[in-house]
Length: 121
Image 1 (cartoon, rainbow, N blue to C red):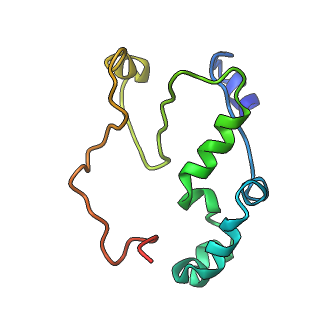
Image 2: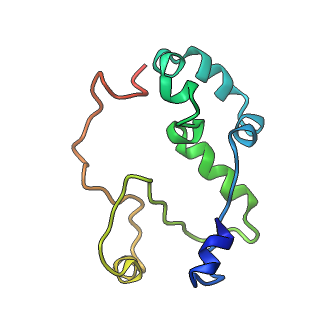
C-alpha cells in the first residue's frame, strides 16, 4: 500500500500500517473465541470465504495495533472507516477542526443498532 501511494505522489508524511488477521489474534487472542461464538460471524459466508476479516468488525483492536507501532506516538489521529466518502479537498476539511477537542464526527448520531446489526449478539 505504501509503495502504491508513493507511486501516485503521496508524500512521506502519510504513514501506512499494514497488518493481517494473524497479528490481530496474536495481540488479542480473545478474538478467536468471539469469532467462534458470535452466531452471525460463524454462519457468515463472507467470513468463511475470507471476504471480511476480524478487522472489519473489531475496529478498536485494529487501530490499537497501529497505535502501538507508532514511534513517536501521535497527539491525535483521524480515522475514516472504509464506507466513508468525501468529495473535495480532504486537507481543507480536516483543517476546519484544527484546535477543536471533539473526538467524534458523525452524520448518524441518533442511529441505534437494530436486530440486523452484525454485532448485536
